[in-house]
Amino acid sequence: MINQLLQRSHRPSRRSRGTVPPKHNSTQDDQHAHRTTARRPAQPTKATPLTPMTHRQDTTQLSEHTPSLLFLRFSLFSMRFSLLAAAATGLLTVASALNPIVVQDRYLYDSVTNERFFMVGVDYQPGGAAAVTSGSDPLSDPDICRRDAYLFQQLGVNTIRVYSIDPTISHDECFGILNAAGIYVVLDVNSPLEGQHLNRYEPWTTYTGPYMEHVFSVIEATSGYPNLLGYFAGNEVVNDEESAEFSPRYLKAVTRDMKSYISNHASRDIPVGYSAADDLKYRVELAEYLACGDDGNADFFGVNSYSWCGTQTFQSSGYDKLTAAFDNFTIPVFFSEYGCIEVTPRIFQEVEALYTTNMTSVFSGGLIYEFSMEENGYGIVEIDHDDESLTLLPDYEALRTRYAAVPTAVPGPALTRSGGSSNAYATGPTCPDAGAYTNINGTTSLPAAVDNVPDLIADGIPTDLNIWRGRPVITDMDTETTLRIVGVDGGEVQQKALVRLSEDPEGAVELAVASSVATASRTATATRSGASSSSGTASATSTASGGSSSETTTSGAMKMLGAGAGAGVLAAAVVVGVAVVM
Image 1: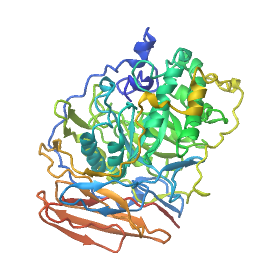
Image 2: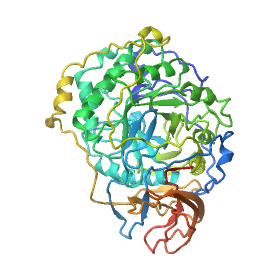
Image 3: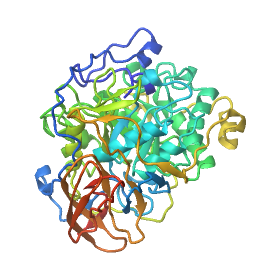
Image 4: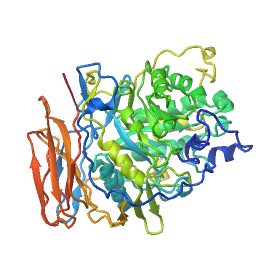
């Protein structure tokens, strides 16, 4: 979200949903002003400590409709992994644990297993827009990345969205940490800094050579990471009549230039998409416009939606109409932001709907807004930026409970990616005439690449710009953060080590989550490569001291591994298998 980042000007949490607030007199202020919502009152701190959740086994309770005998088994990490227990030294070697994600037609797929991928995610920009400066960003401090990647693992997350980075500094270690933890990154290429975003009302004044040089620099700095899932070319740029008139064609132009640069200078065709404002008037038409044609067509479309609040239902929240609106959409669609705060404490009931058949045939998951508590009051953790200590809020546990209940088997079509490993950019459907659109300017006449942009696309970013050209880390790194983490109950989390994921030669799925707490059990379903699926339950007990642990397993591929003294405590198995069974 991040008001200053990527054209944010509103959030429908403390006002009537589906409306657009008045535009500020100053365009610059409108694009970069924080939402003035006061922070929510502090919630009670007495709650269950950071304890692994129990997986919901009866997935039929999550949906009103189970029409098919085909079950789509989907993954929190879309990989077949094994657990490599952290050694007493707390070091790991980062390899490419994750396969790149690709687009085929309207879904996301693992490029190696060819199985469908769902985002189970959270939006991530600690410090908000005010913290965006040259020389630092959310993925530049390895210890902070270790802290938060550990908490992402505990939360059950497989994808994060980052709104802004500095391409001149190294992100190798943080991307490596996230890779090892089984976490993909969707990255915005814009920032709130001058010259690094489009002016929504006068985009021709900001679509310049220096602007595209920044965009290409972000691509150059991050395209080498296998867990870079995709790029957002814009965020909520179109949110009123004036921006709907002037901005759409520039969004397609930026997307066109990005994809051309990626095709020429990256090792793979990384998907490029857009994140849309929570406004019914423009959302669907803009999606259709951005997806059409072969000149600047988007590869995916993110929806920012805050319409489901508290105990609403699929119907009363409008999720039924939202899903129906994208029923015939031609590219992947997912929630790039969701999670209303009009009703507190947040219960995240909409998570259940998103991962059941009401929505899985259309949506590819989503990302809850947001990880850290900022001025707008959406965070699930509180960060003290003086010493970078972190306190879990009750909403963190509420979301963890919901994500733990995401079923391993959801009724749905048997979908696997067809064709080999090619991920060439696809052509969208034919664009209609501009007059076919009611609320946006849908012209297919795009601005030509400006200034030195054609040269940059052809030759790449000059080496004298000192862009950090990121590559996967292959050196040893610490797995445990030194930063303080305080649980919801007020107690300090003692064991904070990541569990590294590595590919099992036999294709089995084994994963445990490091924790400072005691017992848990969870149903797990996994698939061996080239074999039929099997399932079972796994449970484990452990002590906060890490001195002892016990193991109970069944015949399933998912199992708990006991931890030796000093190796860290392994507490809960996490579902990571993907398969389709009939």
